[in-house]
Amino acid sequence: MENFTYYIPTKILFGKNQTEKLGKEISSYGKKVLFLYGKNSIKKNGVYDDVVNSLAAHNISFVELSGVDPNPRIETVKRGAELCREHNLDLVLAVGGGSTIDCAKAIAAQAKYDGDVWQDLYVDKKLNKLTSALPVATVLTLAATGSEMNGNSVISNPETDKKLSISSNLLRPVVSVLDPTYTFSVNKYQTAAGAVDIISHLFEQYFSPDKNGYLQSRLIESLLKTVIHFAPKAYEFPEDYEARANIMWAGSLALNGLPSYGKVSTDWATHGIEHELSAKYDITHGVGLGILTPYWMEYVLSPENVHRFVDYGKAVWKIPGTDAMDVARKSIEITREFFSSLGIPETLSEVGIDSSKLVEMAESATVYGPLGTMKKLQKEDVLEILRKAL
Ligand code: NZQ
Ligand code: ZN
Image (cartoon, rainbow, N blue to C red; front, side, top):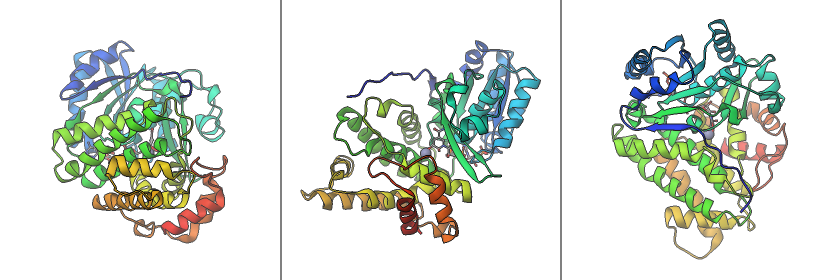
């Protein structure tokens, strides 16, 4: 096992009615916050009122910024940072899914940063320039990204058609409320996309060509089995508390760092390619991943890395057989069928993507170097995967 530093400082308040404790938690960071959310969902399902009541109970005032888009935009980040400076706010409170939380982190960074975070951090990757940020708190309403427990932020710039990510421990939320009942109102489409995103985060850390990481692989298989067991239930019965709770906690654990601590390598190629799809076509992240993943698996599978597919197929799907390549191919097919059972399309054309921007996307996906480790994907490889997925 490789050396690692465990650092997951986010305090998690998990379960029903936990928002009641939010005001008290936030009061140790200040008395004035930016209350950031998306469109209407939190007003419809009552989460907005729960948050306002909890803040009021601890005399915390807030400035509201709503309208964060799925695939959040840099212009919202700038607006949020201006509000933080203008009103001298102490903390950014994100109430929503990954988009709202990612946007909150970017705001928290920009509020304390003299330069332009988009150019310096997201584009130029000079993360060492970020030396402080406002604290971020979250109330999660959609199980998917793990943003509630990690330091990642993914932001889009429609002017340049770029969607780029950063990761910094300074941006890990100080506290996150995870109330599974808040996800009862998530529709089938977003429930499926969220589950696929969680599964993809697990795949990205599971699939690596080395043979190490025994404990990490077993942890990941447990999380995969949990999501695969409960996603169809949440999809059919949106108010199944156990299903929503298991998926929510699995989503946070999948991308808080824990599954890959000590691993020699991880992959992340599918995410790299998907971010191009979202950047150019504004499609839902989990849907893009669901389409690409089986094609990526077929493309990278080789005698050198087949052991990972065999482990996956046998542990997660109980695929019988002794021919490694056969088990691997069956595990890929069953993955595709599982995504389809959740209504995820199987091709890019089904979500309105044609061949016109494939070269541009392949180029842009590899602009910082080749993607992945299962097979190092150059521009031509990415293009081939995109072509197969059409
Ligand atoms: O805008 P509102 O009204 O909130 O509606 C949202 C939005 O339309 C809705 N929604 C959220 N909670 C709901 C709800 N609808 C009904 N009931 C609720 N309780 O769902 C829609 C999608 O929300 P969004 O936040 O965009 O979804 P998600 O959580 O999947 O976040 C996706 C974004 O996160 C990035 C993605 O690239 C994408 O931009 N990612 C962030 C990561 C991270 N920070 O670690 C890692 C991921 O790999 C990913 O890249
Ligand atoms: Zn993801």
